[in-house]
Image (cartoon, rainbow, N blue to C red):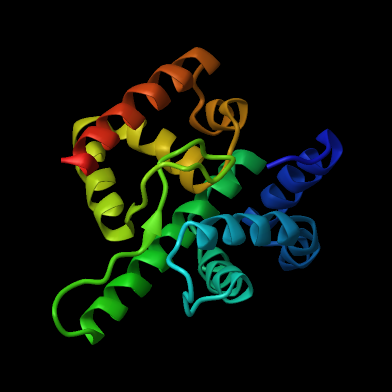
Length: 191
């Protein structure tokens, strides 16, 4: 999630105004965040099976509708906003995968994602999106912060610094949690 410091400050300022009920702030916010939301959607969909029926624009639109409904959100920063957007996109994709699996006979269909670095698609073996989701839910029960770090880094594409900012913890804590969570998820998903 790259962008200038100024645009990050602009996004945060608009989020605070939107939170205060200023609808014009939301209208001004969307052009600033749309490109990054599309990049996030493309990143998600690159990890999916080929021929996925959702397109990045549709994923962004569905996430946007859910973001607009976030009436009780207390936007802390640009990183917090993108973290929430990533979480919403993940849930949309999981719901989509569940619906597709329910349509199929013979069990759930695998949706390919990788457990490599969050900012690039790696050559790691592909895993089932629903399995990743279930494993992440299990990790959240054991260590909610580690699960949140995975969600922000892997699914949200945030940097270590942005993740630390969104969670209100140190850079070192995020690195430690990211390493531990990836190892736990890898063990869980591989066997």
